[in-house]
Image (cartoon, rainbow, N blue to C red; front, top):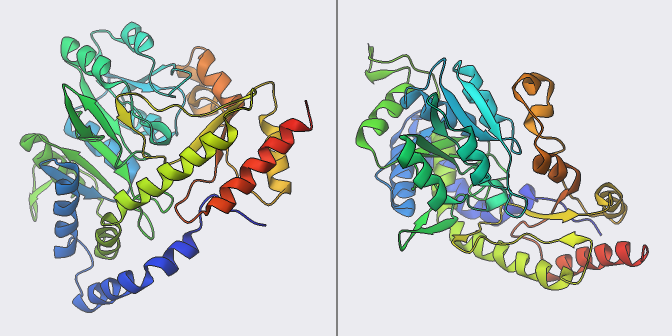
Length: 373
């Protein structure tokens, strides 16, 4: 048996009948950059997320950088980010000459620890970037209260959580629609993905949207009329067409992955050395990953065992960002981030898995621990 973390080839076969005509239409149109289909996709995504503006761009990292640029983040400013995350969140802050202020995360939800955020805030703090890791939501009510009290901007990194939700002020909102900006990636492994690279940022602020749109297109208000220092970051029409089709499937994808997650929880609930992912009570997980924590130094042996049984698994992330050579000068020790890096293991959770697949994976995990009891 062979079970992959994600099966892009099978997903393509599933979607080919709908996607190929769109690709052909774009190719025949000759409009490959910033065409009508890009604007149509932006409108569709804005309607889905219930936000006023979606600005598409080249990738998720660019979305974060453009958001920071639109907010005026510059040298001397500080931006609070998690120590346990993908490297992009640190890169964009440093590229603008600002200072990344790393804080620890909570052990249950992998999100910014509120007490640590509060301690990190000072007069130089201009923004906080909560990363909705693995599809789980950040602790928004506390973050929003801190941000409002200290006049700090919030940029949501939704690259792993598009389609997830959070209930705040008595209203259920999509992740990415709560902060000053939301950002996402359409990398092929995401819940909403294209057949290459792509990204987008979202906001309800008209002025910020106008600035972000200009920045993404060389700072132009109109052609050859440059008002801001910008970048060249655009979603091409082919990818927009593919995303337009796949957006109609996003809720279905999340529902299927949620069912798979529940199956995992039911089958693995009695393992004492495995902690299963818990869902934030105020949030709806989009299950970009199903990430367990394995105690007693058994994570790596379990991964090796699964590989031997034909089952893919992944370690996101093998070390805190501040343990990376490029970022060691920014860091103190972050005990929770360090502990998580030794314990986390993500299991396959893509929509094309069958219940038989999940039961086989769970049986192999149970057999691994039974052999050590």
